[in-house]
Length: 109
Image (tube, rainbow, N blue to C red; front, side):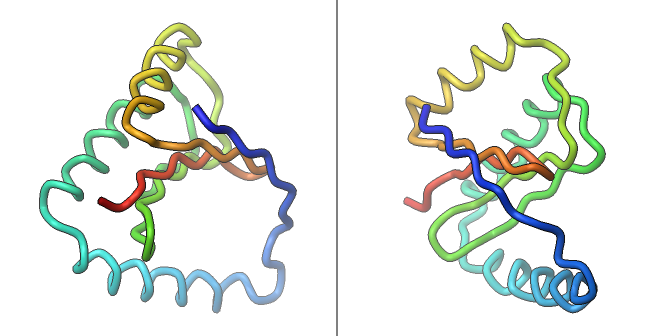
């Protein structure tokens, strides 16, 4: 599985405007994905909730991929995480680690 670690900062003063813009874009892009792609993202969210403990889990629909974001995630079961990541690697799903979250990206087909 391809893993990328990036260093980003909080949005600060513009956090509210950035959140509203992200929600609007998410809803607009969600309609461009098929039902099977949305179900796949939801299944992935449920699987990740079983192996991670996190503050929030979000599904974000982007132009080229669907992102499943786990905010402030802590691993519950390392063996199960490794199994899931092996399965995700076969499907071309990548993982990005930031200071705020762990993000899994499902490429668009």
